Image (cartoon, rainbow, N blue to C red):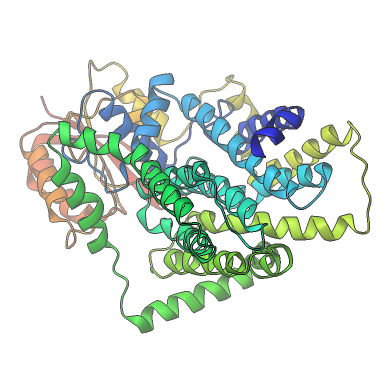
Length: 503
């Protein structure tokens, strides 16, 4: 069925691809429109990816505690463009096109093409509202969710829900594994829908189909996981990968007792209603009204609702919440948009004229550009007529005349971007400092102290608001072996110091 839709709607998909490319051109700082994406997270991903594709082993020679797949994706972006995010912009366009087209096909299950097309245009605007500068781990995960959601709803249209195509289960396995390799707790999205499918198959005594689906799912899981396991095994890093991605993250996720978790959930629920009222109500419409009204399969109704609930819990149960963490549950905004579009089409009849396929993307594009409001950058800078300003450009210039400079950034901040802009190859394991307290992971600060004592790096960036600022600022070895050659003040309150080794 989906293959047939792809052939029939190829013109719509071409327009959606063009829309995606333009939307991200204006609304993602991965785009070549902007001088640089200074967001610390994406620069961390990019430079660890760079280290990996230049022979460093993840977790043992290049450290962060995120899942491995995100670094391999950014490593591919690095191979396309070494000192810019143009490669990542191309990857973003391809993956967001998948998400938007999946949204279109999902909406088409319940309405005419023109209304489904409108839903596909509106849905990414919800994602943009929490996507920060572009390229977060959560953005990749909502793309995986959108593909599985299409397949879930295709199956749950059948009231009895008997036979399930193993190839669909294979795809679910791939999507689950990809999510597990980026942010492990978010795989809860798949748990209840997959369970509902297996129960339906069992209820209808389709035991052969049940076995086929279980095998297909396991194969799907292995498609992304097996190459990663081989990579770590080949580099003798399986134990390090386990200790970092599983054990360290378990220790870092200090959730507190049941009372604290409940309090976090209640507060976050209130904040969503209070400060994101329209978006959140549309999402809740998709969570509760959509399954009751549009899903025929009883277990399917329950599964979709429970999928949101558990996803919402794992996102908000921790006190360490950042606004872009909520991107994965915005997938339910797609269902809310379908409900609203279906209500509108009952009163407003729109004929699928060619000009609507041009007008609607232009309107959606204007809304997206207004929503992100990235145009605070001077026009002269965007056009390349004026030198960009900021820490990344200022500090990178200090290293421009050095041969093979090395750098250590002692916090997770703007300093990460200097590695990208100056094309600096990481030469030590803890070249960038994730926000891990010393009490949780003392090894990082201890090793960085040794780098300073042994003068293993040429430049050091230290910010006044980093976890270990007082420790490093007063470290005798830093002041004995390095001198401050430049400073940068952000928002008149945050001071960055650039140190250079005394030769």
